[in-house]
Amino acid sequence: MQEVYKNIVSEKENKLLAVLIDPENEHLWQIAPKIKKINSSAATHIFVGGSTDPDSRTDAVIKEIKKHTALPVVIFPGDTNQISASADALLFLSLISGRNPDYLIGKHVTAVPKIIEAGLDVIPTAYILIEGGSVSAVERVSKTKPLSINNIETIVKTAKAGELLGMNLVYLEAGSGASFPIPEEVIRAVKNNLNIPLIVGGGVKTKEQLEAAYEAGADMVVVGTAFEQNTSVFETQLNQKMIIK
Figure (cartoon, rainbow, N blue to C red):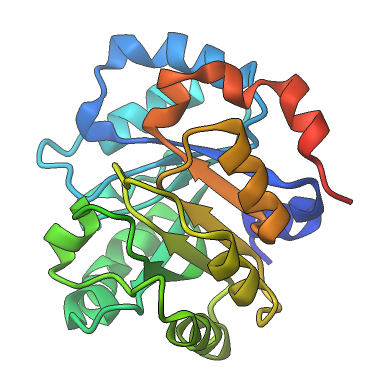
């Protein structure tokens, strides 16, 4: 079993927190101070990736991150040019909420030689785009529509289908810049029907929203720009209060 996935499964009861770094928006000189903040926070993982990376910065950004942290660095890819042997693992995302064959299986076939050469831990992940109140980069790039938060039954069945297909994780995504996070009732309904870890991301900006996602059943929450805007929300001291046994 992959080491990073094994860690997620064994530690999920402690409620995991991943900080997402988008290589397209980073300069190498910015990495060290950002990672210092992450190391001092409640973060347990660092995700690296974005919907686009036209300048192929991912590998250089990951190498710089690895100089400053012992946290697992996991690729959250938007395309094949974001695969890097310098990372610890790769979320092998299949966008099962949409019907664009490129993001269901097409990109994956293209990526196989790079993944094998890189020797990464590969974590098959059912990626589900959920309505977040604004058009996300994922929606624009993948040309797929998010599932409506009012159709919980479809969201639950989609997540369960991902598990039955053999995925190791389910990732509910409201998208970067979401106006609101995924509602608690959606998270709870999905979690109650899964036997694999559940990741939730997009729109989480406050301590209350973070706690709500955990209480509803998220095993890992992913934050991006919110971390930079208000690091104090994710301090270690706060995390100790949020752990749910």
